Image (cartoon, rainbow, N blue to C red; front, side, top):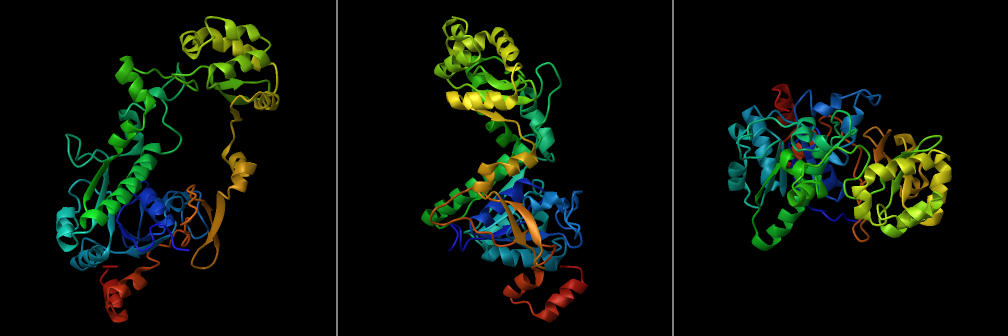
Length: 396
């Protein structure tokens, strides 16, 4: 069955995470993605291990490059630039994350390629965007987490700011990019022309703060760091039990009444300090210690079972291995293996999108460096002799 983006050709000049995350999603949705890499080295993340597969490929690379074809091209050489321009002439999408203006000297910038292919959707991902005083700065997820305010709300209330445990600004930017690309492709159906997309990690990181942004814009108070607590809902946080921790997510006043009853203090639900969520937020410092004193008297699993029975949202705090073993994850098929070029299984995490009519397509495992160079060059009309000469000259 064809994927939703079957017939769409994506030329991917991006590296590391934000761009590759976007192009992997496009590949999962059925697009043909050609990943252009530097000869002899490739995407930096190929070497960001351990852990590594037996062939040396790092787990980091495997996370974001499924379903792509890899070709190696040296764009600093005229012949290499010509190859990429040929590919761009036939592509629907070009994705890149070079510094602002970095591809202009190679004739691979949007104005140049638009003249060759007016239907091209050209997506640029940078740290700070194509405009503004920081446009020339390199962008790194960690730095952007700090600059955007994300780290100011992450970590213990009485401790230092923390980054999120995964590169969320890269990942969110990748998701924004794939959405923008699909929107531009849809717009092209009406206009007949492609367009440029300008995405910045900094912009995306700020946008993803969601209710935290609004809390400041509406309330005027700088959002504090609350550790595992929620700024707008109480109790909505981690609590300790006699043998571990669990998450309590009380979403409304009726749920709180049930929590109070389970704790043996039904009167809390009528207490004017705690009756409504707004009251509980205002009196967080009084309520949370009362709950903590009760929760520590029983085991984690006892509380989870009791809260489940009462219809109160809750959950365990799993390690990654426990998450993969969770029966819900197993039932949803989120763990899979894809064969590499030699037929060896490569572990993967499934795409979480479930489409009934055009389901996700798993073309292949993440490619070896330059695995598809010959095949792609042949589609451009290059002969075996020409390809051999390009190899000898270090162009591919």
